Image 1 (tube, rainbow, N blue to C red):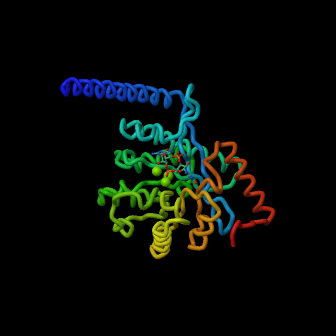
Image 2: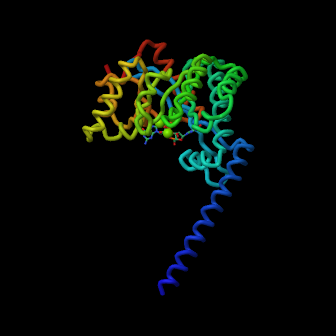
Image 3: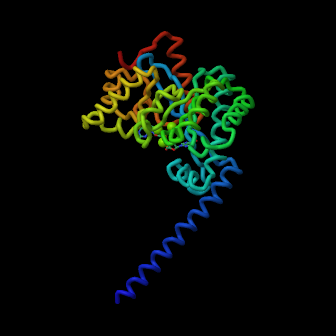
Length: 290
Ligand code: C2E
Ligand code: MG
Ligand code: MG
Ligand code: MG
């Protein structure tokens, strides 16, 4: 009986494995098609300075307009794209599209605000990344100062490689931020060795600031540390007025989160920019908090 049961388990395991690898295979060919057929698009989430009430940037976030499944969120295909290596062409596409869009907004007379693009560690490790980014900037005509690259702590593990590359990128004139700060396994010593402009406090810390004193202490400490290190700091995943108030009281003025705005499709992002510049022109800077 035990043998029979074992056999059944084996068969079950085997057929599950098959369906998982079949799913991967399908996803891989579908993603390749998506790239070739322009099924990928970017949404833009505004980053707001709550002390001035101005938009200070947009983060470009990839979406997949799937012919049958509708709009697919990156959580459903980015991890797979990382494993398969498809993240490299997808990331290159996202970088170029974000630069192109930002330049087009400028040419149309909209507000001039930097755009942030997420870099996967696979891209970070790619041969001649800096030259590639330089070429993309030249091709799209975007000023390097308007591009911010978001890397994660995993990119800082190989200290010598990361230090050289980040200094090279800074020479190009782009800005560097650390995404999901506090969730990686890296040591803090890289913060003094690398030219980093901004830390993005991960939303897992922000989520419970009002209820978990440990999270509140961690967030307050990250903010204080950035002040001493002369870096900028932005809080991700702000969903409530109370969280916004806490961050403001702790001197973190840059906010990204659903409380202010979700990631927006291009026309909605354009409306938002017009709204903000109309407000500024009318002199009603009306910061939400003072
Ligand atoms: P991320 O870079 O940390 O981006 C922030 C994510 O948090 C976005 O999810 C955004 O929609 C979400 N978010 C923003 N505010 C809130 C909030 O108040 N509450 C909650 N619950 N969530 C909020 P999204 O767009 O689903 O992207 C997920 C992740 O996929 C990104 O996390 C990033 O790691 C990755 N990703 C997206 N686009 C790209 C890309 O072009 N290249 C690479 N390499 N990764 C990308
Ligand atoms: Mg990001
Ligand atoms: Mg993040
Ligand atoms: Mg992330």
